[in-house]
Length: 330
Image (cartoon, rainbow, N blue to C red; front, side):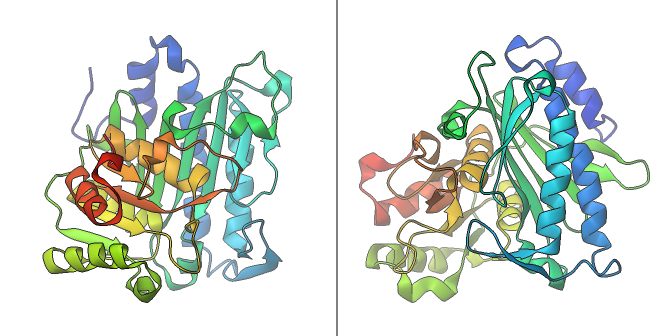
């Protein structure tokens, strides 16, 4: 029985709710490893300026982006905790060109794909950032290769994200629902504060980079104009922060393709798939404008995608402008 009122810890929740579910056996260790890593990352983020950890490493990652110091440290932190969980076979990371394969004797039945520090360009100005995780099952009898990770999002068994902001919140989704846990800095425990999250149908906000408006095709421009006339613009420029607000309060986030990015900008495996899973489990929808995100079959580990995600009625509303009606997610 789910206990509310902020007294149930994350560990108590996963042990009570998941212990008799054979299809996700061992998943609790993966989620707790993410939580443990996030505590360390949260401290790194808060102490970045004092520890002289702001700025870049001077290197460029596989995405062609300048690596922030905290990008590198958070990636290392989560890889280490996930490897130690004993339940993970392979880890794919936005910051790493190749996946990290866990030695067979220390591995388990799960594959994790992650963006260890989403919105890292906002670190230097103290804007909310986060971490994103998608979790798939791996058949332990099969060898682990990079191809093992190229699975559609509809095969995820769980997804999670962290927001490091005015408070540190971890949202976890499985087929049983979506729940939010808030970190108590004094005890180091995550407590259940947002049980049974459902994205509101009423949409007060839309979130998009209006600076890209002139680069959009005519149909997408019309969709944005329609949103402007009805809703308030809220755009942080940190995907996790914008997504978290819209998940709790209602809204739609758009990062469509444009003339300079015909394939989109966000990463299918590290960002779009996990957040799409969370959105659909909370009653929302996610599409690339033509296809349901979770139905996309990935062709590359670092593949990019357009993303339109949020309250279902508003995603459908946008699709009436940018796609044929029969392409709307169901």
